[in-house]
Image (cartoon, helix red, strand yellow):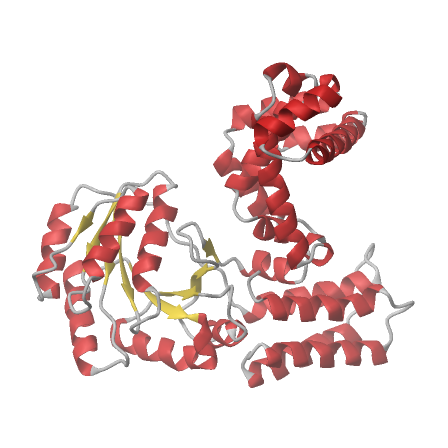
Length: 441
């Protein structure tokens, strides 16, 4: 999980409120001290941590809960609001014709991020090309070419040409008919004069709509000075933080960059080319506090399942017709949405309920269940009641598994079918689900 230690600490702190008989000034002060400690341990800027915790304390002590909201809910809401405010206003990337330029120090993950950004934009239906403007690092062009081949995006570069400006000019001409061009520039171990001059020259040729600074979240509080230095050099318009999933110091990068004039646009949350997320402060903090992020969950579901398929599935489920085929389709859709742990973060309360080991165990079990169902006949998938001892033994032999694993699958199926049956009998729940697909009942 992104900023796992900070999220765990904040959720443990908020549990004290949930278990308290009433909200007292003493409890609020203890809560604030715990939040302050959690922020500082995650390397959040000291001044910001102190200011943030002070604002939470002042509001929690002085403000009255709105009508219809309990004192506990009000304090949690204040914590959420203040953490969101600390990250600044959200800024999304426009989805239309544009030229983008990525800059950053050496080893920050620019080339991989170029591929992730290209994949993100391609999934939005845009045509694009990549320009390998890092002419100094050996194999930089080859690396970007391999990434481009993986995601089906053309790459322009010349491993024999050390003139970055010439490569960029030729690349722009090559991709003039595409919606988006992304320029991957060179880096250095430090922001020196030569790097600044090259970035300025490339920027004057490209005339980019956005210049994104790519920064490794593990740099901690050094992120602030770095962001300011690049901003002064070439006018950075946004920041992409990489390796945020494995960084104990990610809080420092978040807070330090957030107070500059270059907002965080994306965060890298893993090594795969799918692991790039837009940073919406409200959604990000909701997941951090274990409140879930149902909006992003729905968006991910829409990406892997078209509207008509989703509506057909919903109607079948609500009618009580739930087969192993439906269960298999759900598992496949869930797998396409990304690693299970990240999906669970978006479900309110799930991140607190499922520990890391349990998530991994469940992920393995889902993959195994899909293998088992692949060894079943269509008749068995449509009517699981047919699966008795002899069929269980045949399926186990065909899938190279133990008969108990088939029984575990059938048990999981029966639990899911029962849950769907309960939803099908709940008129209010039916209406709510169908509204998600734009259909009233």
